[in-house]
Image 1: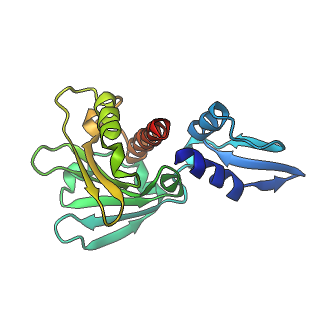
Image 2: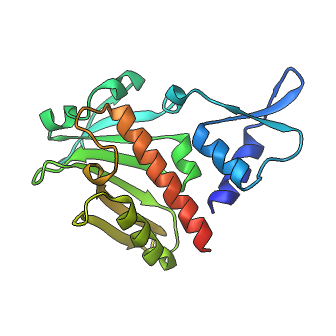
Length: 201
């Protein structure tokens, strides 16, 4: 699925610059395209600056209990430390991003768990039910804590896996990280999960 989406992405994002056909991606996508030789002849990959992935993201804050809309945010909000959500425990953050669609995710929500104080990541992954064991295996092997907990629930009507895990259990986690740094790690996790699922087909 990732391979097919990547091919479509390349076709839909070809730009003509000074007579050359180029496609702009980030390092993770470039490495994947090179690995699976997905580039058509005559097209050049240009690697974006790492800081620009979230420039066009749609970001909003909401109330966890009522889901009331609290405000739309700009990319500057991403420079806040994730500890913001420990101070504002009633809030959650919701992000839509073009790059999420590439890995089969419409949006990602982020909040602090009221009971455990962990930073929770929630999203719906467009993947068939048959991938249950592959998803579980991937997630367990990505976590640095053996007792890490996560939730997996398949929604048959929507055809998606609702997944909830703690950012605290991923390698590189720090309470000092910014929201942008957290979402870079989340995107890497999603990309690797999508690639793993592709290999299982």
